[in-house]
Image 1 (cartoon, rainbow, N blue to C red):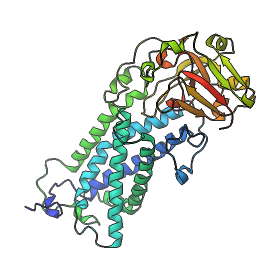
Image 2: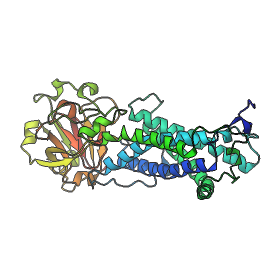
Image 3: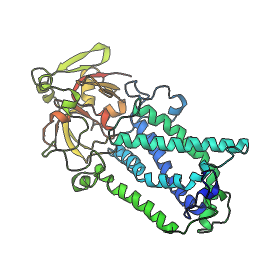
Length: 411
């Protein structure tokens, strides 16, 4: 019995072979492509080229070639794209692990490089396997709010995605024609350019290849069923038992819907949000500035919008009814008759996105509000009392809570 994993006879599972590997590879080809596209859209949704406060990925250079002004229509756009990105990523984990298991003999094959072309292929596999594990691991940790990796999640996941997808694309170009030929042959395990995947001395099978694929697919469906519910409200959210934002709604009443940070966590005290202490400072053209307390804001024209909240971790809420002052009306108060960009600053003193920038098209949308009420009641402290921003289709962190200052102008 060979003891070295570099020997083909060391690997004896009868499940390994070109057909099994090809089925998993085709599933990953489609799934990872969707993950990459929705990940790029998530990055674009932050408007990272608008202001340095939005950009957590410095020196992106050419990697930001595709950026565009993130739209406000439809209002559920980010809820859809990020929900797909996170839920699909988690559901693909069993497929990824099974694919790595199916090709593990190739990682130990000797000699490590038979030619320059073979050496480059092995290097691409190192980037592919390492990049895939890195991206899926950091993504799951972010979803679970476990920030144990060094540095900020945003640049790590962004740069890791480009490295991984470049290796994935090169691998797909080389292997997709072979995979399709293997699938056409169904169970045919004759040599097809991946002979090392076929064990020379297999043990007796305890499950068929189709049965093994059923186990992998069942694992993916289980993860899907225990994750997807956090993109919804009501009973479906309670099925998301593996997600920190699953389970029952956090409270009841008009403010009983999901949040990320509580006022206590952000260090917001009742003393600084009370009617006597809190003032909103709005600054605009030529340094024009106004200070408004909450009663003065209530004297302005109030409007209502039905908008969801969606966050990068993949959770979202259905439409909530927000009521407040339109952002474009606040811009007009300080001399901007035509909507412009705005920098919004929170009472929160520490942490990422205590400041956020919004584009002129977001300010111009009549549904974009400085909200004072939600679902017919005053905002609760955890939902941003005394005032918060709510913008259609924007990531949750750009909907700044506990707003203290708004500066309108080109950013």
